[in-house]
Amino acid sequence: MMAESSLPIALIGMPVLAAVIVLTLGRKLRLCREGAAVGGALVTLYIAVLVAAQVLRGTELWSWGRALHVDGLSSLMVVLVSLVALIIVVYSLRYMRHQVEQGRTTTQRLVVYYGLLMLFLAAMMWVCLTNSMVWMYVAIEGTTLVTALLVCFYWDPRGLEASYKYVLLVVAGVCFALFGTVLLYSAAAQYAPGRPALLLTELGEIIARFPDSAQTVSLLAVAFFVVGFGTKAGLVPFHAWLPDAHAEAPAPISALLSGLVIKVGAYALARTITIFAPHYDAVIVFVAIMASASMLIGIFMAWAQDDLKRLLAFHSVSQIGYVIEGLGFGTYLGVYGGLFHLVNHTLFKALLFLSVGAVMYATGGLRRISQLKGLGRRMPITAACFFIGAIAMGGLPPLNGFWSKLTLFMAGGELRLWWAVAIGVLVSILTLGCMVHAGYKIFWGHPTTEPATNPGLKEVPISIWLSMAVLAILCIVIGVYPQIIHPLLHRATECILAF
Image (tube, rainbow, N blue to C red; front, side, top):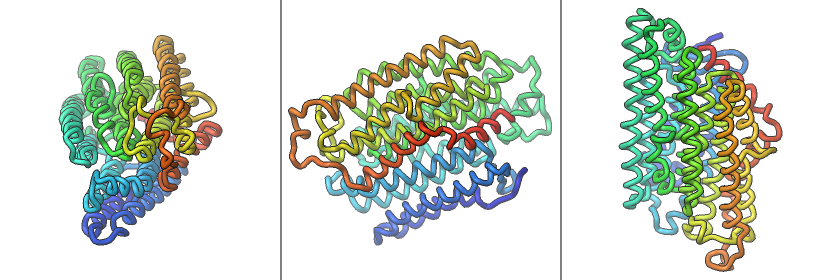
């Protein structure tokens, strides 16, 4: 059942309104800066939950004719994005004030920070809700530009370089997705005349009408989509921007990049390549090879890092491979597992980056493993949150990462892609080893040097550790009771396969 609703418009409009309040009144009133950001994110989450509730009852929502469309996948994404955005805003309240105290930024610059966060949230809502392939491309580029300004927020040389690389590579990369869109549109004019070829809801019908002679066009379009959206997702070999951007951004923005920004590319691939997979076996193998390469290269590079933020960045390169591989399988188990891991990765990777931010907060900005030992005695909550995130990413029960990886391995076995399953299992073991090794050195190692021996070292303020605790609890709850997220995942998977 479909229904016209203003809720999709409100999902985009609310963070835009919050951004306007922050940028116009935030310089004079702290409430209009931090309060508007928290309120905007909170109301957006509330609207997202209302939208998801209607979708779970079997009602898809439309706005502005067919321009905005909310189905199972959209509802899953808007809830996830708004939840994580709210957590990051709350975490930022004390963290960014501390950055002002340390002289890294100014109170006036915080107006720009919270304004950009709200604009980012609005752009993410637009990506998830638009029904047009062209407008999805525009919205994705919008998230890129806003995020680039957040990456170089400190306005230091390294941040500016990372931001420039991010913009250059992602904007150029996503242009290939636009080429794929143009290619499909031109083919649709020949093989499916009269169909609105630029609407995502029509893409499945159009692809089904392509004759065997159009296979080359279809496969070339898939290649363009993988290159374009894979660049945004940080998939190897299009990942060069990711380590620098994650490392040089403020800690909350690093969590935003890994938790949400790279998921934009995964979402766009879910809207496109999953439609081609049932028709072309070559797509399944091609995506599996690309994803497996990303897993292996990402984990090998992670093992070589001493910088904690770069270590987690390369884990993002590795873990996004699981998501893309599942979506590329094109089966129910594959798509379900890919979306499940997308959700889980968002939660535990945001948790890990926020935990590293807490370490940097307490130690005066240190983030090298070789400089950090024995912090667990002074920061038990941060240590517990870090290890929960590490074990979840490693795929051990009873945490959430276990179930999504198990689903993906079953999907690979169903397709007899045993080599892909073997690589996935190997990378999971290496991931667990890498994270436990880093966590042991940071939190359990003997404190022989500063800052671990500093008597003033203590746990971070409540607004920081509470944000991490919420994510840690979600990792545990979904791991112990995965059925809690099944309805949304099932509806999202069904809507993808229906095309």
